[in-house]
Length: 127
View 1 (tube, rainbow, N blue to C red):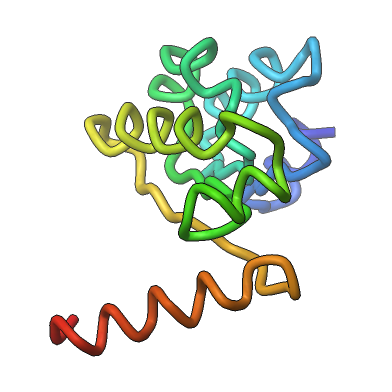
View 2: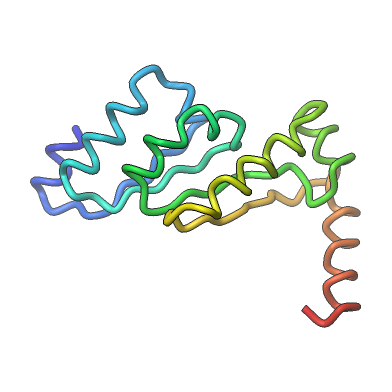
């Protein structure tokens, strides 16, 4: 399907999920997209990034890593204990690569206060 997409003039491929890195054939899909000269991005929770970093660097143009919250406590309530630190470690790895990195947070009742706190802090320090 990726090859047909590229042959028909497609230029950009976005892999989302669930979690695209959990697919057994994700590396093959990414290689196929690269071989077909597609601008390829994925949306990921970041937890498998360290395991797949080499293939991501070799194939991706961009990546969006999802956080549950800008604060550890509310993130881990949403995503599970310890995930905040693991996601930040993944982001730290990714920003040292040529991949364009974005971080996304979905606003919801469980993280709204943390988002507001983060925005208030940005205004306070002039960001």
